[in-house]
Amino acid sequence: MDTPRTYSRRRLRVVADADPSAIARVVERFQNLNIVPRRVTAEFSSNDLLHIEVDVCGLTDEQLARIAAKILQAPCIVNAYWHRLD
Image (cartoon, rainbow, N blue to C red):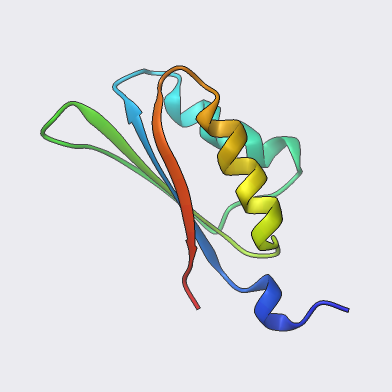
């Protein structure tokens, strides 16, 4: 059985081009898995990139790594990575 540490809170960080569909592309990966993120934020930076953060619980490292890899396949995505918050 998985320990509570396995399902701790994680943050996915995504850097994307200034594309109107970037936020939807990120959030749809969680929607496909029927997961409601704890928090989603997006902010434009001074270099015309969009920074998106998604906080989630209930996912393993492997699951979030697969989500990040799928997000990276979108042409508007510059980078996607995750880390634990707890």
